[in-house]
Length: 236
Length: 90
Image (cartoon, rainbow over all chains, first blue to last red; front, side, top):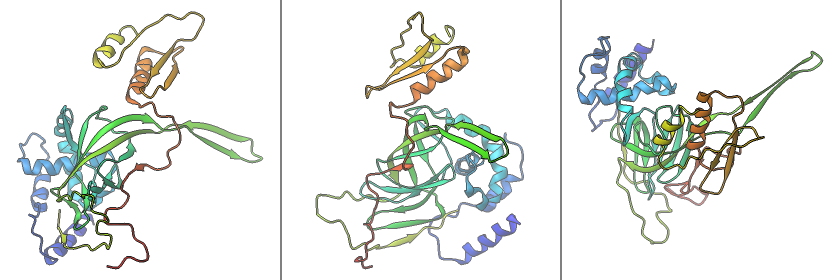
C-alpha cells in the first residue's frame, strides 16, 4: 500500500509544476534497496540521502512514511552513519527535517526528532536527548521543510535538498521532575512515580540555502509583507 | 570511583576536579557553574559507574535552575516577514 502511494505521488510530481532542481532519483533508491549487502560502495550523492533517513528510524521521525523505500535503506546505512557521527567538528548524521524560514538573521523551521520548529539564527531549541553528540558539537540539520526571508520563500516538497541548518549543542540536561500520580478512589490504589525527561538544548548558528538580507538600520523592513518571488522547489 | 576519575579528568581539561574527604557527611558531588550556581548530588551507596554518570550529567548541564520549561523554543525573532495584524495587505 505504501508502495502504491509512493508511485501515485511520483506520478503526481511528474505531472506537476516544473522543478528546476534535480529530482533525486527515487527510482535509484528503490533499486538500491534491493541489495541487502551493506558492504556495497555507494556513490556520494546517494550516501547523503541514506544518511538522511537512517536516523529517522531511530528517532521515529514521522517523515519516514513519505518514503517507504527508505525504511529498508536505513538499516543498511546505520553502520556507515555511526562512523560519520564521530566526526569531531561537525556531524552530518542528523536526519531531522528542519523547516526553515529566514529572517535578517535567517529564520528556519525545521523538524527534529519528529517535531517541527520554525527557527531563526541565534535562538535555542529544546529537543529530545541526542545520543551521539557531546556538548559543544556542531550539527548540520538536513531536513529543511521551508526557507523564508523577508522577500523570498522557498517551499520544499517535502524537504529542500540543498538547505542546511547549523546548530551547536549547548547542553544535555534533565527536565524538571514531573510526578505521575495515579489513584482510583475507594479501591485502595495509589501510585506515585517521578519522571525527568532528558533534553538537549541546541543553539542555531547558521542557515544556508537562501540569500540573506542584512537589514541595515533602515526603519521598517518590508512590513507590508509582500512575498515576492515564491520559488516552489520540488524536492524528493 | 578512583578508577574512573583519572579518565574523567583527562576528558575534561577545562574542569578543575578536587577530591576531599569529609567526615561525618554523606559523599556528594558538587558542581560549580559559571553563573555562580552550585549543584549538589548525593552519591551515598552508589557504584562508580553511577557516580560517573552523575558527574557527566553535571558536566553536560548549564547552571540553569531546573524549572519546567515554558516553551521549547526560545527566539528573539519570532516573525520573519512581519507579524500579521488586521491591517496587513498582501
